[in-house]
Length: 196
Figure 1 (cartoon, rainbow, N blue to C red):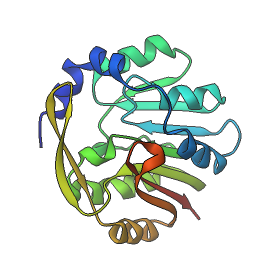
Figure 2: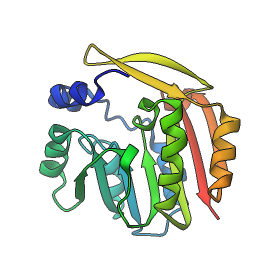
Figure 3: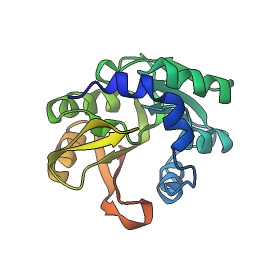
């Protein structure tokens, strides 16, 4: 895996400045929020600077806790949204001792290798309250790829949707929706699940 921490730490301001804030994710966010209680608690893993995902949730009066492993990203989030809770941490070691109504990992979970994803999904599930929703961006199918952030290489991986479904079911979650390379969301592959 690339030096992902260094990439985001070095390029936080540039990433934040260049991040598309047109909210192409709105349709998926609306589906996610539709599964949550009003004012519910949401954990945003790999929150970055808080824009635009946490910003959208905060604007709807959700109680947002953002977690990122890059302090420079969190500094931007704290400055922009001081009323939210921001924590430094790595989702691979997720153990907050709290439950949330929703867990979101947009453009972050897919930076983990397959073995790491298999370990992290149960951690995410343990942080979900009964009836809670989980939304992730993944790949369109099983495999690995390289992308770029600020001109630096970053690793991406995905399991097959069938394997995600099995892991989620083992953790008491039902797959609500999966769309590979959604044209309405800039080609993101999105998985949405709900805990029974």
